[in-house]
Image 1: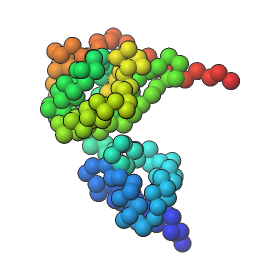
Image 2 (image 1 turned 90 degrees about the horizontal axis):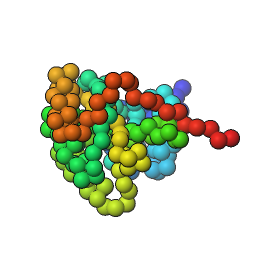
Image 3 (image 1 turned 135 degrees about the vertical axis):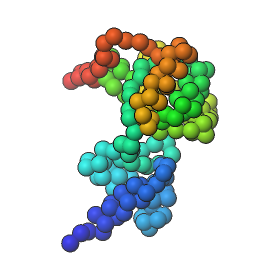
Amino acid sequence: MRTGGEIRRNRILELLAAATEPVPGSLLASQLNVSRQVIVTDVALLRTAHPELISTSSGYMLMHASGTRRVYKVKHSDEETEDELTCIVDLGGTVLDVYVEHRVYGTIRAPLNIKSRLDVQNFMRDMRSGVSSPLKNITFGYHYHTIEARSQQVLDEIESRLRERGYLIETRDAPVIYAAKKYS
């Protein structure tokens, strides 16, 4: 027999699978008649078996492996961030994440799921609020994006546009992956 928690966690997965955008934890809590903290705990438990369950600044979502993905190493100024993201979404790409390779801390990754001009505007509004600065700034502007699109051809077009704009960092070798250093 399944417990109430198991039933609730299955319902969370069902709600997220049906969603087309991130679902706020407060909405899940009200739909399931529990506290937000219960949702946070349930999501933490679910992530052990479902790594595709991610949290964004807008809520929780399941990353569906629906398209083709490619990682690009890029560099640009803070002022060029909006142009970079708009180039990608205008050509049909979704910016799944941003990450940096730090020589001390290792890989630092943040989910984005930016897929439209509206998402770009919302992201830029948050960045301009002054509360936080872009992750790329801790590595002198160098960073990576995982981009998803419906085909390799779309990814090729995105790559060409990033190259034309001077954002794409061309490397012969695979990017260096730094492991976090241990100081104990």
